Length: 376
Image (cartoon, rainbow, N blue to C red; front, side, top):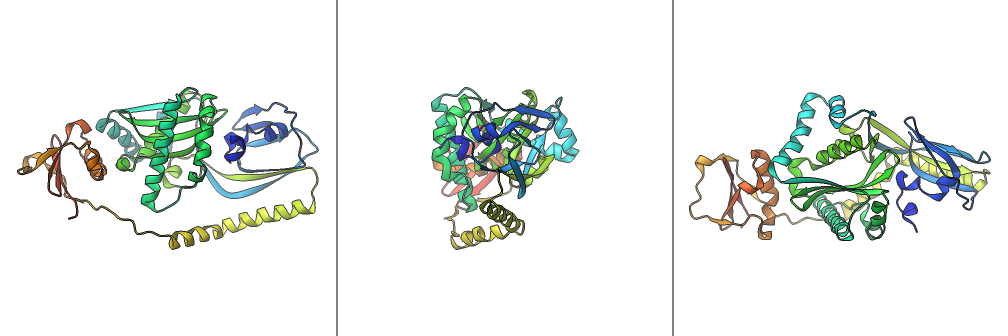
């Protein structure tokens, strides 16, 4: 099975030979993409799900008819004007308070760490590719384990790992990576269609949660879109709060059924699809996952760290404490708390020192310190 059939998103769907054969053009926001006339085998019926409603698909063969069924799936995206910069967009989309919050995330991240941003598009070594894919998978597993949830894309991970490399080389896909030094801390696997950048899977290192990496990623990807004459940054299905805040183009998906003759079997299929969408509208589809989460709920072992308030350096007392290497894996349990300290004090990672006495620690910055305690 090709990647065009395996991953049900429109940048891949629209490269499918069936789509190329069926539709002479695809239109969106005053842009038009013409398809080559493939001489592929013609079926009598086709089904294409999750087509954003802003795409207009023009049939090539007038002997075909189509039924468009609205799906109860909402999508979120950022639509740019052709002359937009990222600064133009956030000026329109957010009030001054929210703009300051978003810009603070980016500035604070760059203040506290040696940050690099990298888009891999058309060129990447196989070693880099495998390292980034493994880093992304580890981020997803750790993040969703903390949430006690399953990630929808992990079941297809081996397939993605095998097939995505050539998609990046052929400029059908890309990686956007935020690095702290040489360590990826946020990764997005994207797909491309014409002037659309689709963020398919993204995740981040939860030790950096305080820094709003999801917002920083969107900022930098939209900036890339503006600099490369893309008009749409797609975030796909799912109404998470940060998507809603960034999006100026919220839409529904459509299910296209293309056919030559309306048979009894096809009528029953249409009824089944419409019933499924009705049940989704009533949120009936959410009941089985909730039951399953309840039945499989785990009590996660948590290593609770007790944090004191942050104090000024004049009050510090490090008698009987010894300095330890805060970059050591032995202190990974403290990593999120160290990063929180950096965020709250606007300190750079290289300026702090970690001290230890039994199960107590002190994070010492230039102007502030904080005590941490592990359970006995």
